[in-house]
Length: 118
Image 1 (tube, rainbow, N blue to C red):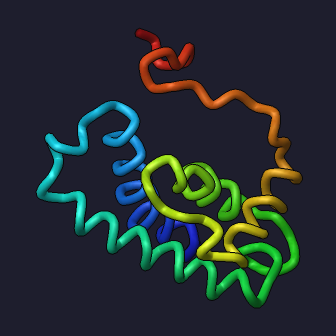
Image 2: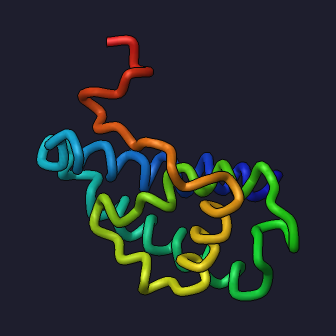
């Protein structure tokens, strides 16, 4: 549960927002929040990296819903200026989670996401 709350407070609203603003040209519109989100995103990735240096998955040796939830936005952190190779344990974890869930799924640009209904 702690990792699911971590995702809701430290990954989705930070990395998710930065990614959305970056890919939709809205960084300037949200300029006042960008620096704070970048700092918070770097802290979140560093926290993940520290934890994942000790275990293959967030809650231990097995893939859990926490891994899937955090993977959703965090593995796309490079899309908004973060450097995943700066976080080697995190980067290795994204590979393990990707292998476990399958890496061949499409990632659609926001403007043409077929699931967006519009």
